[in-house]
Amino acid sequence: MLLVATPLHLSVFDTVSGRLRLLRKGDGEYYGVSWNRDHLVVSHSNQDNETLATHADYRDARRGYLSLCARDSDPSRGTACLLQPHQIECVGDQIIAANTGLNGLSVFSASGELIRHVHLNEVTWDRSEDGSSGNHFNSVHRQGNRLYVLAHNHDRPSAVWELSWPELEVLEIHETRASWAHNIWAGEHGLVVCDSKHGGLVSVETGETIWRADEPRVITRGLAAVGNLLYIGRSEYGSRGDRKRNDGGLWIVDRKTLRTLERHVFPGSGCVNELRGLSGQDDCHVEAPFDPAWLTRLAHCPLRERLSHTWSWARRAALVRRSGTPSPRRA
Image (cartoon, rainbow, N blue to C red; front, side):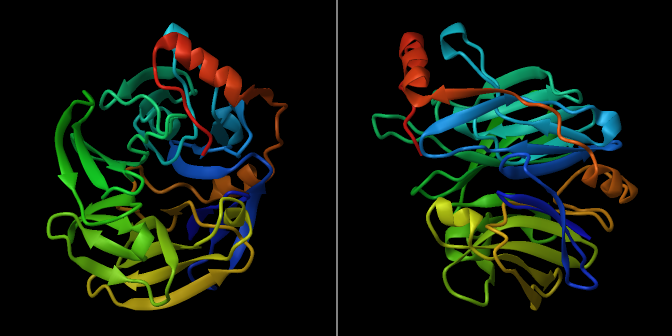
């Protein structure tokens, strides 16, 4: 089984029957998925073209669900929480989040409290009103005492930043031949990323495309490595609005030969933001397999009233100008 995150839904894909079963909807745009002990953690990007909805919305872990949504931050006071978060990864009692909008990393406690925020360079916003772009850090993967962070880099070649864990000091920056890259896998094929713009997987060390999608104009985003198989998320090109309407899907690939075994399309599911393996150890995710018994509880976990704010971009820009940081622009 696989957990599949799309903007509108969190679903379970049965790798035996090939069926996609809806698990949750209505919580906001689903993106990163991870787990810690007996609860699932999900990040929500919640971004549109007019306003940014920010939430303080943490669910009791005993009910099986912990949500990390964007929370209000005030750069003029030096505070930073989540802004358009992407991939997350639980490591022990901590949650590492790619804090994409703030162009850095944030580390939370298991209960959702911010422990620390780290800017990896002098750029503190992913997109600014003056037209400049940050690194669009979107993926994190911890392996031993290393943390790999993927910089999408917009229209520049993507790069993998190698950090020490838990110090979060930058050790090396690995340039890649990938574009719009997402997801990192450190395995028997070396360090591999999704070359999302060109619909493939690329070796960071050699620059070789080790796998290519069997159809044109598709985006590879979402990667799981379970047993002898790789699962690669499938999305279609389109506008930001199309991301909620287009067909998603995934490919199942032989992990050793890198031969495509199956292709599945999810009509009208929206783009695939993330995949996580449930039926065995997922080598793209450090935590032990999630207990499937929790999925039933998760599906029936009631929504709690959100503590929400609608934060206009004008107000946000004013805060940033007071802090002396280039103001962000709409995506």
